[in-house]
Image (cartoon, rainbow, N blue to C red; front, side, top):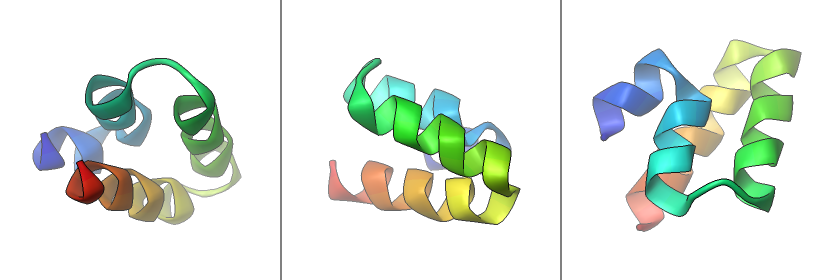
Length: 48
């Protein structure tokens, strides 16, 4: 799942936590910049 988070951060978050607030936060961070979305996605997946 970590590899999926690196390629498409929102998809990795959606698979780890489902569609909810965390997913939409990650989409926003990814739109603002790939790196913030990536860091958030890896953090969410690692906490799981």
